[in-house]
Image 1 (cartoon, rainbow, N blue to C red):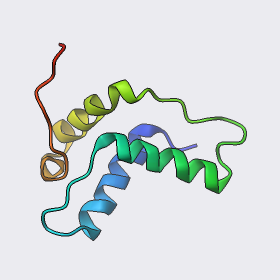
Image 2: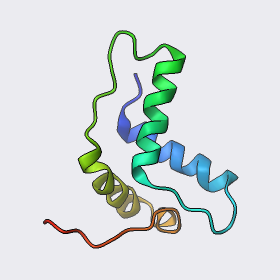
Image 3: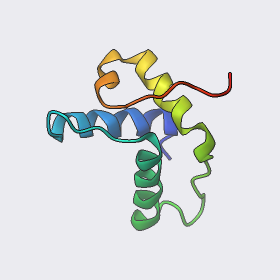
Length: 82
């Protein structure tokens, strides 16, 4: 099973390649896309994809730290908690 650390950056790269110039996406929407893909492909039958939406913005920030090209994809707000 591919890990979230592999799935999420690959999905963002794919969306960056195929998107319109000013198109952005939310990190929660990407997590839902990964969940639904796993369900419809049958991968979720034996091991469900468990990730809390509470950390989706943290994953977006981690991706941006690893690859600055992702800044143009995510619209980030200031964190309310540290």
